[in-house]
Image (cartoon, rainbow, N blue to C red; front, side, top):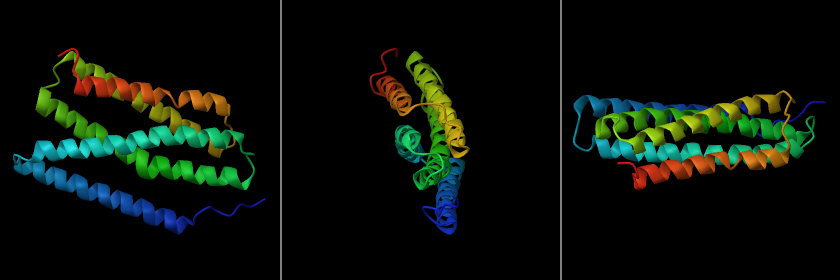
Length: 181
Protein backbone atom coordinates (compact mmCIF):
# COMPACT_ATOMS: atom_id res chain seq x y z
CA UNK A 1 0.00 0.00 0.00
CA UNK A 2 1.45 3.38 -0.99
CA UNK A 3 0.70 6.52 0.93
CA UNK A 4 0.29 10.02 -0.42
CA UNK A 5 2.47 12.43 1.49
CA UNK A 6 0.61 14.95 3.62
CA UNK A 7 2.73 17.68 2.07
CA UNK A 8 5.06 17.48 -0.85
CA UNK A 9 8.76 16.90 -0.41
CA UNK A 10 9.49 20.14 -2.28
CA UNK A 11 7.41 22.08 0.29
CA UNK A 12 9.37 20.39 3.05
CA UNK A 13 12.68 21.27 1.40
CA UNK A 14 11.57 24.89 0.98
CA UNK A 15 10.61 25.13 4.65
CA UNK A 16 13.88 23.53 5.69
CA UNK A 17 15.88 25.88 3.47
CA UNK A 18 14.09 28.94 4.87
CA UNK A 19 14.66 27.76 8.44
CA UNK A 20 18.37 27.13 7.92
CA UNK A 21 18.81 30.41 6.02
CA UNK A 22 17.18 32.27 8.90
CA UNK A 23 19.38 30.52 11.43
CA UNK A 24 22.49 31.23 9.36
CA UNK A 25 21.56 34.92 9.12
CA UNK A 26 21.03 35.14 12.88
CA UNK A 27 24.29 33.33 13.59
CA UNK A 28 26.21 35.59 11.19
CA UNK A 29 24.70 38.70 12.74
CA UNK A 30 25.52 37.37 16.21
CA UNK A 31 29.12 36.62 15.21
CA UNK A 32 29.50 40.07 13.67
CA UNK A 33 28.06 41.69 16.77
CA UNK A 34 30.33 39.60 18.99
CA UNK A 35 33.38 40.61 16.96
CA UNK A 36 32.64 44.32 17.39
CA UNK A 37 31.32 43.93 20.98
CA UNK A 38 28.73 46.72 20.96
CA UNK A 39 26.95 47.65 24.19
CA UNK A 40 23.65 46.29 22.89
CA UNK A 41 24.99 42.77 22.21
CA UNK A 42 24.12 41.24 25.59
CA UNK A 43 20.49 42.38 25.40
CA UNK A 44 20.01 41.11 21.85
CA UNK A 45 21.59 37.74 22.64
CA UNK A 46 19.23 37.49 25.59
CA UNK A 47 16.33 38.13 23.19
CA UNK A 48 17.70 35.47 20.82
CA UNK A 49 18.04 33.03 23.72
CA UNK A 50 14.48 33.59 24.95
CA UNK A 51 12.99 33.23 21.45
CA UNK A 52 15.00 30.04 20.84
CA UNK A 53 13.97 28.60 24.21
CA UNK A 54 10.31 29.34 23.52
CA UNK A 55 10.57 27.64 20.11
CA UNK A 56 12.33 24.64 21.61
CA UNK A 57 9.80 24.32 24.43
CA UNK A 58 6.92 24.45 21.96
CA UNK A 59 8.45 21.44 20.21
CA UNK A 60 9.09 19.62 23.49
CA UNK A 61 5.44 20.11 24.44
CA UNK A 62 3.93 19.38 21.01
CA UNK A 63 5.92 16.32 19.93
CA UNK A 64 4.76 14.08 22.80
CA UNK A 65 1.20 15.25 22.06
CA UNK A 66 1.64 14.12 18.45
CA UNK A 67 2.92 10.80 19.80
CA UNK A 68 -0.30 10.42 21.84
CA UNK A 69 -2.34 10.51 18.64
CA UNK A 70 0.23 8.58 16.63
CA UNK A 71 0.24 5.75 19.19
CA UNK A 72 -3.51 5.30 18.63
CA UNK A 73 -3.22 5.35 14.80
CA UNK A 74 -2.81 2.17 12.76
CA UNK A 75 0.89 1.92 11.86
CA UNK A 76 0.15 1.21 8.19
CA UNK A 77 -2.51 3.88 7.66
CA UNK A 78 -2.47 7.34 6.13
CA UNK A 79 -2.75 9.15 9.50
CA UNK A 80 0.40 7.36 10.69
CA UNK A 81 2.31 8.44 7.58
CA UNK A 82 1.15 12.02 8.13
CA UNK A 83 2.28 11.91 11.77
CA UNK A 84 5.73 10.68 10.69
CA UNK A 85 6.13 13.66 8.34
CA UNK A 86 4.91 16.10 11.00
CA UNK A 87 7.18 14.65 13.68
CA UNK A 88 10.29 14.62 11.50
CA UNK A 89 9.77 18.21 10.34
CA UNK A 90 9.09 19.42 13.86
CA UNK A 91 12.36 17.88 15.03
CA UNK A 92 14.54 18.88 12.09
CA UNK A 93 13.16 22.32 11.25
CA UNK A 94 12.15 23.68 14.67
CA UNK A 95 13.40 21.66 17.62
CA UNK A 96 17.01 20.87 16.65
CA UNK A 97 17.89 24.41 15.50
CA UNK A 98 16.10 25.98 18.48
CA UNK A 99 17.92 23.70 20.92
CA UNK A 100 21.29 24.54 19.38
CA UNK A 101 20.65 28.29 19.46
CA UNK A 102 19.33 28.01 23.05
CA UNK A 103 22.52 26.28 24.14
CA UNK A 104 24.89 28.57 22.25
CA UNK A 105 23.28 31.82 23.35
CA UNK A 106 22.62 30.52 26.87
CA UNK A 107 26.22 29.46 27.45
CA UNK A 108 27.46 32.78 26.12
CA UNK A 109 25.09 34.65 28.44
CA UNK A 110 26.06 32.47 31.41
CA UNK A 111 29.73 33.17 30.79
CA UNK A 112 29.49 36.88 30.00
CA UNK A 113 26.79 37.80 32.47
CA UNK A 114 27.58 35.56 35.41
CA UNK A 115 30.96 33.89 34.82
CA UNK A 116 29.23 30.54 35.39
CA UNK A 117 28.85 31.41 39.07
CA UNK A 118 25.89 30.85 41.32
CA UNK A 119 24.12 27.67 42.39
CA UNK A 120 20.93 28.86 40.70
CA UNK A 121 22.75 28.95 37.34
CA UNK A 122 24.08 25.42 37.74
CA UNK A 123 20.62 24.14 38.68
CA UNK A 124 19.25 25.89 35.59
CA UNK A 125 21.97 24.30 33.44
CA UNK A 126 21.09 20.91 34.96
CA UNK A 127 17.45 21.40 33.92
CA UNK A 128 18.56 22.30 30.40
CA UNK A 129 20.64 19.12 30.30
CA UNK A 130 17.49 17.26 31.36
CA UNK A 131 15.52 18.94 28.57
CA UNK A 132 18.26 17.96 26.11
CA UNK A 133 18.12 14.32 27.26
CA UNK A 134 14.33 14.40 26.82
CA UNK A 135 14.82 15.93 23.35
CA UNK A 136 17.11 13.03 22.37
CA UNK A 137 14.60 10.56 23.79
CA UNK A 138 11.84 12.12 21.66
CA UNK A 139 14.02 12.09 18.54
CA UNK A 140 14.70 8.39 19.01
CA UNK A 141 11.01 7.75 19.63
CA UNK A 142 10.14 9.55 16.37
CA UNK A 143 12.51 7.22 14.51
CA UNK A 144 10.81 4.23 16.16
CA UNK A 145 7.40 5.54 15.14
CA UNK A 146 8.65 5.99 11.57
CA UNK A 147 9.84 2.38 11.57
CA UNK A 148 6.53 1.16 13.05
CA UNK A 149 8.27 0.13 16.29
CA UNK A 150 6.65 2.33 18.95
CA UNK A 151 6.33 0.49 22.28
CA UNK A 152 4.66 3.17 24.43
CA UNK A 153 0.92 3.62 24.82
CA UNK A 154 -0.89 6.91 24.31
CA UNK A 155 -1.34 7.09 28.11
CA UNK A 156 2.42 6.79 28.67
CA UNK A 157 3.04 9.54 26.10
CA UNK A 158 0.55 11.77 27.98
CA UNK A 159 2.54 11.19 31.17
CA UNK A 160 5.86 11.80 29.40
CA UNK A 161 4.46 15.13 28.22
CA UNK A 162 4.74 16.41 31.82
CA UNK A 163 8.54 16.03 31.96
CA UNK A 164 9.41 19.22 30.03
CA UNK A 165 6.80 21.15 32.03
CA UNK A 166 8.42 20.31 35.37
CA UNK A 167 11.93 21.04 34.07
CA UNK A 168 10.80 24.33 32.53
CA UNK A 169 9.20 25.47 35.81
CA UNK A 170 12.43 24.76 37.71
CA UNK A 171 14.51 26.63 35.09
CA UNK A 172 12.21 29.67 35.18
CA UNK A 173 12.31 29.78 38.99
CA UNK A 174 16.10 29.66 38.91
CA UNK A 175 16.34 32.50 36.38
CA UNK A 176 13.67 34.80 37.82
CA UNK A 177 13.89 34.17 41.57
CA UNK A 178 17.55 33.03 41.79
CA UNK A 179 16.84 31.30 45.11
CA UNK A 180 20.46 30.24 45.65
CA UNK A 181 22.17 33.48 44.62
